[in-house]
Image 1 (tube, rainbow, N blue to C red):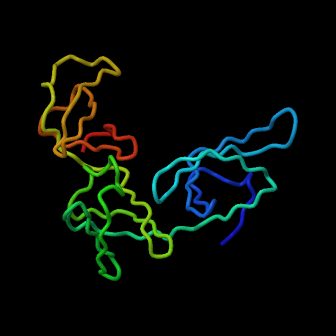
Image 2: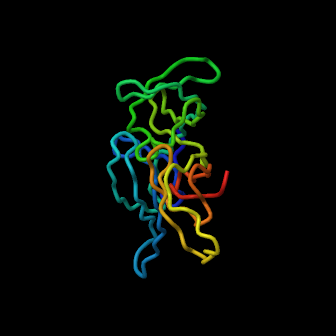
Image 3: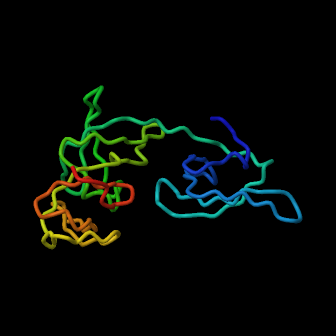
Length: 187
């Protein structure tokens, strides 16, 4: 595994630290008036989700871990487990529903997602950035309502509530950004 200096840590890096795998969530480079510069890093444990704030000086060496990314196709859900199939080997894997967290409702049948592995352990799953959903409930379209920044609540076919522009009506398909969980555009 490559070792990097404490000042080379970037958000998104995965580090081996204190006998665990940690993702750097936020990195602030601090140069105090007295003493040496350091990186203040907010870390999230990839196995249990706990958080940790740590200081790394530029002389500190940390182990950077490369995760293997594989495209996997979602097949079905059974007893709180999601079943995925590897697109190359056709091997099936079961992962707990919690791996997707609050983005779980956006997972659709047959969808290809990216699962990150460390050795043979699945640590993270990423949905496509944009997903098409149908609006099943919203207020009716009001003609002439063109005020900028006026949004109305809508319920999607997966049960998620999002804010949509006033021109979006019921039974329309929209594209939702799965990272921010907000309306992106019309489908």
